[in-house]
Length: 78
Image (cartoon, rainbow, N blue to C red; front, side):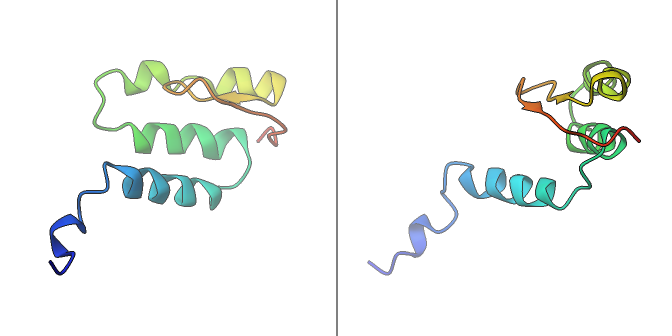
């Protein structure tokens, strides 16, 4: 067996890794994270409603991922 049968069957781990690495390249600001939320969830029907956390982030400096619930603290409020 040459191993080629399993090269693309990573269970989605590669896609998640690529998204995470791309997210690290995003500026640590409320505006940038809100824009990336809309871009990353463009195929979701509720993306506009779910990605409205920018105003809350501008008040508190904490962005909450709408789908993951993960908190990103210490954001620059621009």
